[in-house]
Every structure is written in C-alpha cells, then in structure tokens.
Length: 182
Image (cartoon, rainbow, N blue to C red; front, side, top):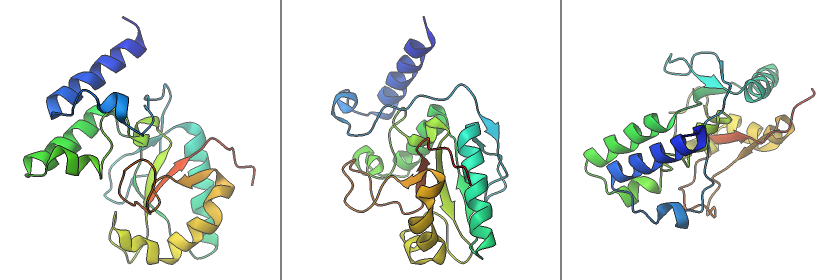
C-alpha cells in the first residue's frame, strides 16, 4: 500500500471513530490536507510546546514575526503543525465533553481537512489577549497582520462568513507558498 492510500485509510478510520458521517468527505467545502514530507522545528509556542512547520513556512513566519517586532508588534506562535491523530484527539475531547460532532466541526476541521496538517498554518496571538479568541481582531497585532501578512505569503483562511463553514478565526493564518524576499 502506498503512502497516499495509507494516509487516506487513516483519515477514514478516524472519521469513523469520531462518528463523522461518511458523506463528510464528499460534502466538505474544506480541502483535503496531506501531511508534509519535511518539517523543521520552530521556536516553542505560547504554551512552551515544541512546534513544527515546513521550512518555507517557518522562514516566512520568522521574517514576518521579526518585521512586526521591529514595528513594536508582538506576534506569538500559539500552534502550528498537527498530525491527523492530534486533530482526532482534539475533536474527541470536545465530543466527550458533551458537544455534538456537528458543533465541533463548525470550529475544528475533521482529521484530514485541517490546514494545520500541511505544516503551513499558524494560530497567532499577542500579549494582552487570550489565545484563540475572537477578541484578537481588536488588537494592534491583528491590524498589523491584516495590513502586512500577505507580504510574507500569509492569508487569514476563516474570515467572517467564509465559504468553508468554519467559525470566524482571526488568529488562523496560512502560508500560501509565496516566498518572501524581504
């Protein structure tokens, strides 16, 4: 069995274990996200956990973070790469807390569909604001990101009323592959 088939079977098994309807794969508006072949270590995240990104995304993140810092803006890494098993456990914990799978899937992409699997997505925070909250949109860090992130190849994937059906996430930014040359 090749690597792609193995990954696909892992995704299907995790969906089944979570009780995600079999038609999710056909009906999801989210792209299927494979895990990258190469990841590099980044700085520790806000919680002092090790994180990984693709080399290109890490280079762009470092340049963006340093440029923001030079402007007096603090960008904090909240989370980066997570594999499909991590995504499974994240969702399973919320379901065990009593949330319905449909409710959880409005906030978290199903295993195999999270941009975090690609090693190019970041959850970003700043000082003076709790991580992963909508209030992040009221910070100078968010204002700086909306004005400057594209220069470094990052876009906010889940704006208000996005077509993916995921709740608004002003903290979630994904490296699109444009290599910064700053």
